[in-house]
Length: 132
Image (cartoon, rainbow, N blue to C red):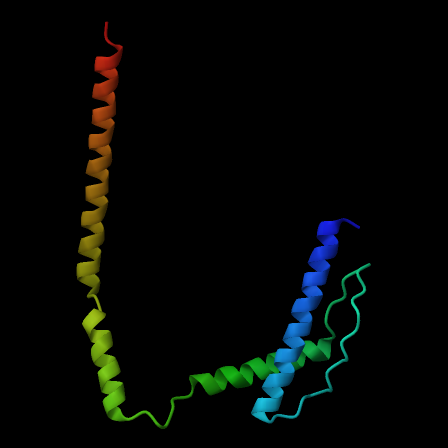
């Protein structure tokens, strides 16, 4: 087995251990009972990689879905003043689609004419440099 493959497998095992620790911490903080007890950490078998068990993947998907749903719900402690000030800041930096289209068109034309001028300068320089 090559050294690079061995190092990659070792790094993969370390990442899996870190993910397992994160999962345990999330369960501890959220107070949810895990679907199944986490598997004890074993020394990695570097001869062949093994995929995680299917119940581990299912519990991870359920935990991610719970946390994503909690993140998408609006917070009840936000006052209307906070929301209004956030909207005002967003409106300050918002660009109208028509002006954006005009700016993009101007930029493309500017780049085109600059490139055309550059080609003209190069051709003129070659003409004067190579004439006899």
